[in-house]
Image (cartoon, rainbow, N blue to C red; front, top):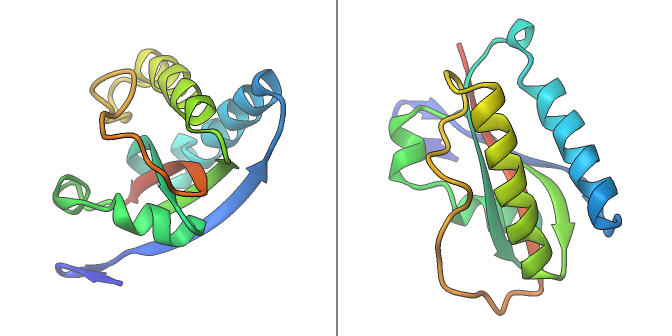
Length: 131
């Protein structure tokens, strides 16, 4: 998908239906590994989305703010049929990474807003920029 003058890669590295504590630990490890400074990641955003499949869900969440930040990769990392689980994971992940990596984590709060979704699956995703 072309966005401005750069290409955006959408994809998935999904884990599904882990118990909450295991999902949180898995996501912390996965995000930390993906955004390691030696991998060229200069900024990232952790969010949630919903839809019928992971790529469709995260493409819907690729908005002007992400285009302006020139995020060139957007990866679905975790899926659940439970919106409440995803909301809780997003809040804890945002809190953890905003404190741990405030210069590169562009999240501004504990979680994104939005109306409740009736979509069948809910996702944690990671948008990032490499330069």
